[in-house]
Each structure stands twice: as structure tokens, then as C-alpha cells.
Length: 366
Image 1 (cartoon, rainbow, N blue to C red):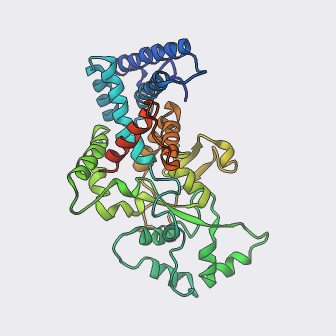
Image 2: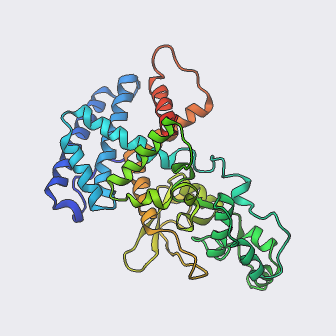
Image 3: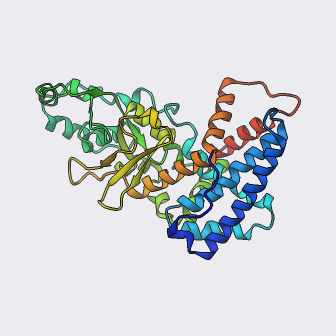
């Protein structure tokens, strides 16, 4: 968790409405920090934990004013902050963005989702191919979009390699004679790896067909956030099976995929060259060979689109706000407790965990 900077970025720091909204966030942050310093941290009772949670919520609003990638989104957030009539209203607004923007990107990702096992790492169920053309033809056959077909098409687009490291997928080398012959002819011998298909907008974020009322309310709330940012078109672009479009997926080696889906890494456009990005991370020690490196996303064929710059910008905003505000740590801590199956305390000390679990059901559409 990092305190809010004293000022907004230059690009938005000259807009009076943004500055006024940000000063409101700074005021409440300062009051909460003072309250926590007076209480001390030796014994974290329910009141202290509540203040820490409130600090996360107000920092979410503050960092959103730094990282929302559109003027429409900044205008909307600044207006929402100014329309709050009390500090409690502001904290509820921060909680709403936590639950309906940050948490859907974060929850059930990072290798824990149902699609993160065999289907995402082993798309090959047919005999080996003699040539690359044979493999490409089979992988690009028209079929209903699914995680399975998305992975195969992404592998073709990405040259059967991780988009960031450029390292070939081990399974692709095993299953294509032409590709493996070229690979093993190289000196020195290049590295091989296991790759996965990473979704930028997570698979559960868009559903099609009959839905329960709770699921419809969940999806409406989620896409309402995108509408606030001025991105109403994303909902239609990724509707139903379109969540598996090539624009929303990328081939990444296993550890990078887990880091991306855990919001530990994100991609920041350089503005100098199309599809050129800096690899940014909250934990450089986890990916020492790739942190702060420059990558360019290119397709092996002109008819196969690269990952969407807009989708990556939304993901990057979510990741940065989550880590800097402390929301990501809070979500991980509480969900780890839930996975451990801790028994709720009759004293009320588990109120935060119970509240998180109940709100999580709402996020999931229950």
C-alpha cells in the first residue's frame, strides 16, 4: 500500500474538477492515517482493521484519478466524488470500484481458474504435424470460440512462442517436425518453455444465454464501470464466446501468465510505436529477466489481430490501482483465509472476512 502522491499527473493536474476531487481524497487519506497512527498497530482490533480498509477504499479513488485511461472516465469519477455528501458516501464509492472493477479482474485468476489446467496448456490432442502449414491450417479451422480454440489461434498468431520472452512452446516443438527441425538446428540451443493462453478481460466477465437475476445484475454492474470509463463498446465486442477473440488473448510462458492474471504484471504503451509496451510489475524479483523490458506485439499473419491496446490499458489501470491502493493485497489476504476454511469467530473479529465473502458472491453473480 502506497500513500497517494501530493499531486495528479501533469496531463490532468490542470483540470479544476480533477484537482478538487483529488484534494478530497487526500483529505480523507490524511485523516485515516492520523487515526491509525494514534491507534498504533500492535493490536489490530476490528476498529483498526476497518480504518485500514477505509484507507484502501479512498486510495482506490485517488489512484483511479491517476490511471483511468480516458477523459470520460476521469470526468465521471471526479463528478461522482464531488456529488458525495459525506465521507461515508466516498468510502462506499471506493468499495464499489473495488468490488465491481478491481475484484472481477483479480478473483479466480492467477492459475486458480477452471481453465488454467490442462485445457490451457495442452491444446494438442491430434497426431504430430509434418509441416507448419498443416498445423496452422488445423489450428485456424472455423470452430465455435472457446478457450481451446482461442489458445490454438493465439499460438499461430504469436508464432508458437511467448509474446514477451520469444521462447518457443515445448509442446509445439514436440508436435511439429518442421518447427522442431528448425529449432534444434540453432546453435547455441535456445530455451523452451510451457505456455498458457492468458485472457486480458477474464473469461467469467461476459456471459451469454439465460442468466439468473443475480447474474444479470452482476454483469450490468461490471459493464456499467466500463460505460463510466467511456468504453461501452467493449461489452458488445466481448459478448458471450467473443471473450475468446484474439484481441483478448495472448500466449505467455507459464510464470508470466500467472503473474499477468494475478495482476502482478501489466503492459504500458510507449506512445512511440504501435503495439509497443513496457513490461511493468509490482515484483521485479519475480520476473527479473522481463521487468521494465520493451516488447512489441506482432502477428505472424496480417489477418490475425494482436492484443487490443484498449483492453491492455484497462488491465494496466486495474493492476496499478490495485497494487498501489493496497486493494490487491487485501483481496489476496481475505481470499486466502477463505480458501483455508477458517472458522468465523463468535466475537465478531471475522466480520471483515464474512463481509468479503458475501460481497464476493455478488461479484460472482449469486
